Image (cartoon, rainbow, N blue to C red):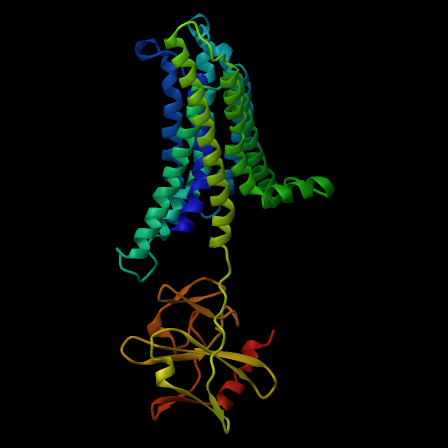
Length: 424
């Protein structure tokens, strides 16, 4: 669940904040008094989502294998639209003030905003949508607790981005338009950096440009710190939050009448509450995209080897020591000095799976147990318990053994013959 959450939220947070900012800065009028172009931003969002769904479906079905011919022009258009959007935001207050006298300029601004939203959403959402394809692992039933947890993580990731945008949107009621505009400009600047980083990386990979020295190091730094650019998109709204609190305290407490005094107190309280919630969601996003990501990327640690009887070149492991259905790991030092590992697990039906703690595909990375599954540490593939003890794929490399007198008996010569699998 956590893995889906920390994957989905970064992909949806930027577009959610972008849509929120543009709706705040460019919305004007109500009902019939709203300009027709006010709907263009919503149309841009719908077009971007539909385009992302189609693109993700084509990728999932392998219709599109090389994504460069789609991503390249998309990123170029994204950068151009972002730059145009910056100019629209700078002029947003002038566009919305007495807009009926210069409606054409507001229509142009809404058109740019709609195009920018469509491109940003189309660029960000395909990877999020493709998370839907890994809800069910091959061979698993459709409805399992694991599938439901992955679905819950996906839903929570999308919901968290929308909630964060809605909470930050509340600042507009107390912050001065100037400071909200400044925060919106900083948000767009961060989105431009994201799009430029992806574009330059793509141009570098296809050989259209060459980077050396400082420019190359800057690109590497931006790639390695991509998550911090997403976190910064939330923290920029601390600026209008603080400004609204300061403005609230500057309002004189003494008023001409009780009603005005209550209004000022309510405004000050609302400013404090909006600022507090903005700080809370900023901290929450930071924790999710740092600690949460670190937890999902944490490398599993192999369990320590267990003891067993070794006498006269024969290893003996009693059934009672390995009959609990869990993974048991053992260590052996071969005649040539190589330290080897082998595993034993009782499978469904009472048979035992015995093999090296290594496979032909991934080497001696080993296996670990998680949620009742045996997983290869290197490729993260869950091994079918029924196939442990047989050759092929990512299965543990099998070796001869016998079962007798309530124990598994292994001739160490059979292990010595396989020591090369543990040599680097």
